[in-house]
Length: 64
Image 1: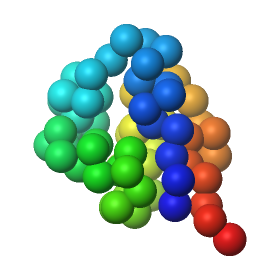
Image 2 (image 1 turned 180 degrees about the vertical axis):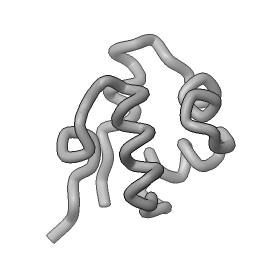
Image 3 (image 1 turned 135 degrees about the vertical axis):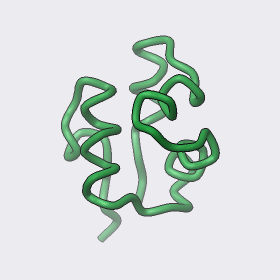
């Protein structure tokens, strides 16, 4: 799975740490999400998308 988390964070000038605090996870979790090494639960995906003012569909790209 690919994500656009880094791109959206840049729009808001937000660090990984700041995003992690907003969604209640560790910074490493955001790092792994950005690198595609971790598939989030639906709940986490929702919270990340909400924190970045976007939708899950815009943020996460499912590899087919």
